[in-house]
Amino acid sequence: MNIELKDLSAGPVYAQVREQIETQIRQKDVTTGETLPAPAALAQKLSVDKGEIQRAYFELERAGLVTKETGKDFLGQTKTTYRVA
Image (cartoon, rainbow, N blue to C red):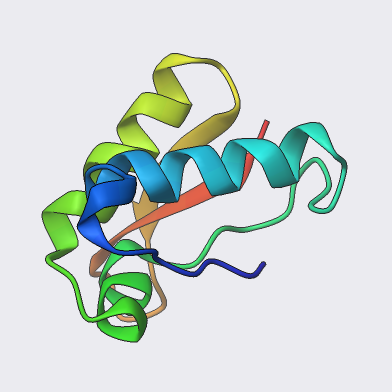
């Protein structure tokens, strides 16, 4: 998955991320069941606030394009995974 931000005149960060992921899903560049990058990891890569990525994922989830799965990792810590629906 390739996500690149334009300048802020192209719109809010969350909207740019959402639009790029949505386009990649609709064009089948990412497949059903594929795991999206963790919000914290993607935020770090793009040098943005994690909340921007979480909002983008929330909107994609609300649109039925991704699913959110919460479970425990091997250390028993809560882990949230986002997958293409």
